[in-house]
Image 1 (cartoon, rainbow, N blue to C red):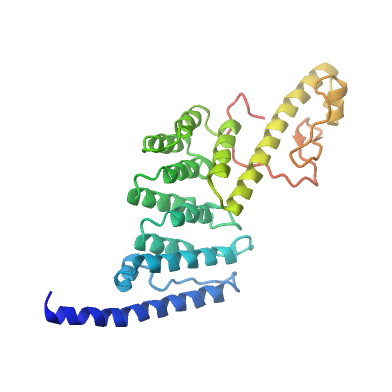
Image 2 (cartoon, rainbow, N blue to C red):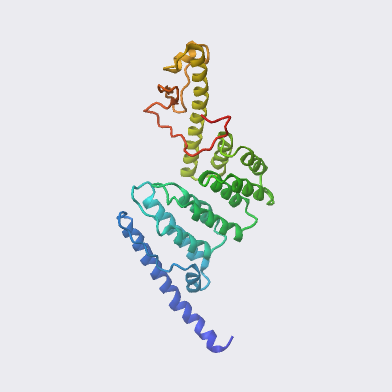
Length: 303
């Protein structure tokens, strides 16, 4: 390097780093301001190009990536659960963070959760979540966790069971991948959106993360799946009850009195199930259980 170039480099660092952090501070101020107003946000991110930020970071890529990831978490946390909230800055923040530090696994994994969650708890952009995870897989081909996340996104968010099965199968071939990924690939391929498959996936989500919010979400879904399975069984029993007695049961006590069940079944929150006039079971109005929507069940399990 010429002496002129050697002289220029320190000056670039002296000038560039403060400018970069001033811009990041401006970004934080914008996030703080927009956290107080959701309805009519117009979100234009300073330095939308990850490569542009990378050039200005002058070797401090990991440090600046951590800052952008922290901003993404703050940005998401200020909006999650707020009706009408917009998430326009979320993808650029995650994209910049992972461009600066392609090994920032937490940003891929939890960023995908933030992007894919339905509104108002997330951006409801499973397409961007998949794009983010694929970006992470390209930069970290030996990380089987990301392959599992991709399978989850295809399965739960997109209901693309062929793509989900392929993602799990590809992940199972990565060194150190657990055996359940091969099992998951087979289950998704054979049974599509069955309760059994969903339960396995959400159980693995629950067991594989230490994040309290994700664990709570997984447990909530597992309880909903249990209730969904209970309702399917009760519906079948209600049909059998009608075949015997000529009318549908009014309560689960009717099923018990007819010898079809023992005791009175309750949902995972302890509330009794109810029956409608059409013989379809339902949750008690006061039950906090939420049954997952969108499961495409095989014909032998369909209600």
